Image (cartoon, rainbow, N blue to C red; front, top):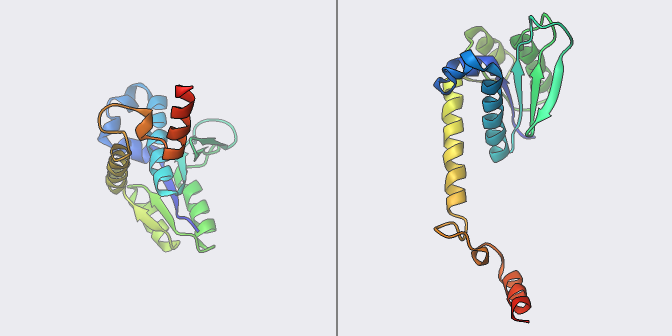
Length: 170
């Protein structure tokens, strides 16, 4: 089974310098930036990820949606992201799935370890993300035809190129 990542969204937003200035003026934009980065990281590695945001002071039930391949959770009224993550970590880890919880909250990290999951601090996750981003950039740069001009001939297979050349010459 593939690894699962549970990310405490606001914990990461409050710990990454990338979000300074943004989180204070446009929290929705900061959330969307984090979702994009987690989606990129997860897609690259083939992980399933859930980003959990506290909606503790917002009235209403839990909200769950898929955005860019990631599960995005806004917890129910009176529920913290920590309690949601604890519940799901326990449920999934006991099935033998390798679970990583991204948070810098020490109490949460201790619970995670006790549940048989792995802890990843916000800082460590930033390093993991940066490494994945660098690998993605290197793979894209190494694609055929990616050196200077974006010519189609360098990016399609020989049979397709030959067929198109025959059509062009008719």
